[in-house]
Length: 614
Image 1 (cartoon, rainbow, N blue to C red):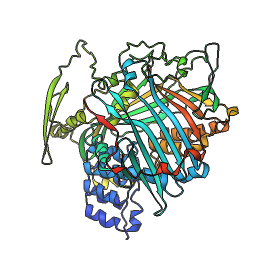
Image 2: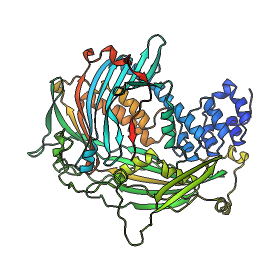
Image 3: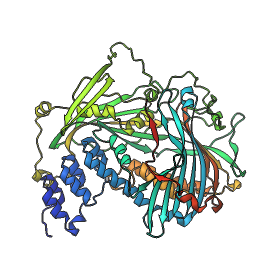
């Protein structure tokens, strides 16, 4: 097929011609350009999503286009699809991404093959726990014992987490669930199973992904009002051993379940930064250049000394083009080595297995301290904001919306204005998972209202459509986003708490090294930092964080012949996430073959983490 015009795939999308697009992609040579970026930094998939070309998007997905690519703003296709609220596209894209994650792990010369070359057998047992002085959270029982088994190409993860009971005081439901990745010798393929040992049920999770998983994933993405992106800046992150004194222990001996003991040295890490990018779409404007309002804020993550500080606005302006800045997060001067931790008392290093006992982890936090704002909803608490000029009457609003021949009715007690806004109503019903992550990181709920422009308001803007000739003009090479009026807020934060590590001393001869877990750690970071099929538009902050964590840190730990036996990460002044190794080994006595088999008396059924509503 000979085509003389530039970017023929993009042009079919711009013309909204799915028939021509299908004919074009029938040519194998043309399909090689399916992920090509145009002069404005957009792939065909990004352009189709920006212009709401549903049929073109489906054709591109059916022809295996890249669903991980980012445009110059930093949004990936699933971000754009979530804002658009296209159910079919989101479902198809989520399925493709999930399969690509698995394929990255199990494909020939992939993560698992790399892992087998260094560590064919591995057994780990660890305790994961939220340690807190808040009595209600102590009753929540956030503790899990996990076991991980690896024997060649077969893997298994056991968890004691069975679900969450939200009736009365929320509590964790204890369970016994396994995830088994098994290599089928007769077919040369992998299968993933979920197994509930209490109910004696099992369910295939790959290659046939359960419908309930896709539905639950869609609930948090369809008709999303707001999307968030989290970027970690580890440019100034520093890990070093703690200097001891009379009151501080710098070494500690950990005894494993096999009765082997290992002496560990305490390290601390600090000066991490986080950039949160929040996006609200106010209107869809077709082939017009996007209007992007950018607001930059900067604050420190809440510590005991700054828990009531408010965001300080740095600036706000309307801009036609969004220039992604690679700004450096500021860091305050380091405190003295002998000073106590700014967020936690160092006495928290001693583990406490009694969940019902109020620990002395944070000596500066009283037990009657109120819950962090982001947890108020979980425990049914309402924040008292009876300040003058801020009172908002709570009313029961009924949303009855007709869309695509369906009638949806929602009732909600809210301070939001009575409206027939489908997206706002749906978003209040099904909040995104990233909403909770944002609240957790910032310590506050995001109560900002979403503005949606109606047809008359858009008409008053007198926007000019960009023609095909203008868009594909070779002289026009600037970065360009189309089809939206959006509000983008960037919050730059510095993490002021200290992360603590107990590292096994070289003389202890710990049975495993960092190289034994590097491939798995690399795979997890690849997903969390959005580095699967990373491209030129992936943010430098994410690339640097990925390189630092998967190479610099691993190599440094390996050089010292050490391994983290315990890690404590402060999440809030009165809450810390802790992981402690209970046993580790490469001995196959911990890895019998029947661990990776489904017991014969188990039956097929849905296996999932339960959620019992109020």
